[in-house]
Length: 262
Image 1 (cartoon, rainbow, N blue to C red):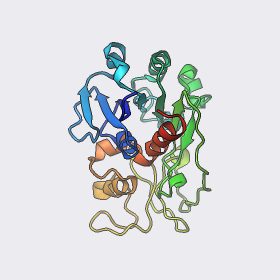
Image 2: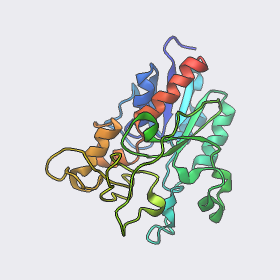
Image 3: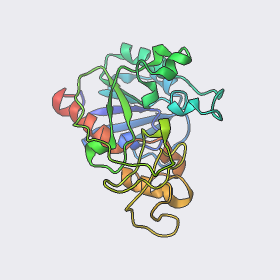
């Protein structure tokens, strides 16, 4: 193992996951099929993640993180206007490949990709289901939920999960989209926000212009509030919608270093 542990960050996007691993001392190498000019990792390689995993020399890496595209697994695919759309379904192939590499790995995805999810069963995708732990923003004192699955080949325990306190206005519902919420405890949730940015609302955030109380994140300039809350303010809006809070991978990275000695 190298003196500074090196982590391979597949499907890296702009680096929400990378930032967390960097905080605990990993040197992070990102791989993405699209150029990522704002990627915050230490190195960036433009390549298809699966092809890179097949052909690259992986001996330099001490651990691997992968965030395959989530659109094909999200609960919102049940919405009428999204039915029938085709998205990459890469969890099964990436899990199969990582299982053969022989290094500690983390595979992240949305809650719709969990093992036994009804949406997967309806579409014949049971084999893609992740048997995984999950993290929530409230576990880290953040003002949103944004539940995400993390499947690993090593053992970890999630922090305690506080009871969700957000309330919905009478006559309004977030339905299956309530897994991602921005809220302020003991205040009403005001307005749901964009399909991809997450799903929810603000209360006490102080700002100006469109970023004022009750403005949904993901609309106009309001998405910047989500960036601030998540700790990834270097990203643009579309990059943010695909990102996870760095504190999630900071937590898992600490586990890898302190518990498993990566």
